[in-house]
Image 1 (spheres, rainbow, N blue to C red):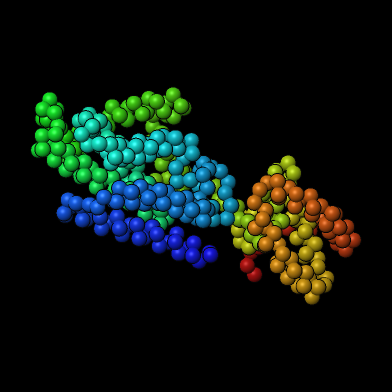
Image 2: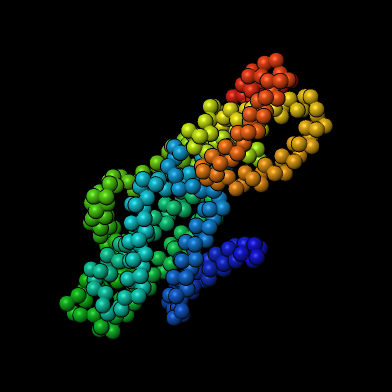
Length: 360
């Protein structure tokens, strides 16, 4: 089942992309398309959004601001969460414009609405282009916006040609014939689009300002990020969580419960350290020194159980519960340390140092 799902997730976007490119080239060269293309376009965009969300999940991209502490290979959001409303509004404008131009009856599209629809498509194309530039480090994510760009450009060509046919067939009112003919010329579309973008964007910015968005939020949405092409922020180094599930507890629980005391180095990367973790590691060190053969057996059992357990510690509450369950063992470890070590607190204190030991 896993391989079937993986196959679908990998092959479907590729197949839809190839189909999209073929239909785009066919329309540009022959000015024709099949009746079912509209439904496939909708399906392609919906599936593209779903598969993009799936990939984001597997890639460890977290919807969080650039200054939030992340773990292991997680990445911050490619769009600043505080400005996401602006980007989402522009995306909605693009897709609403697509729906209007694609499905509204041609003889009902007035010249002004037609021009505004094309301007909305331009907004959608601009967002997709910036998205592609922003996510270059994860090129797989480019597939969805690149397909949207092809669909949007083809729609503009379809709108221009359809409008021209209506004019030549005399189905457009004489009152608007000159204006419609002017708007239908592809050479005029960029000018008209940019002219109408100014008031359209002005209205959008004014409305978004009422919802707490800044006038320059369109720019800050891409630059107030880390880990991406247009990012201008440097995120804090990720804390590493590994197979030692007490490391997961120390980093993942509520601070008032697990009581992290500092950062330390484990396997050459930074981890969050609390006293329970240091006590457990100091106890293991004593076992390794005093009874090495027994230590190997215990270590093997711990490795086989610790990592599977750590995979289920995916919330602060779970980490807190594990912390409390480990408390009796922690007290047992302390008793052993105080029984066999002359300076037990010194041994505990030097576990997971801030810097790795220098090479011999």
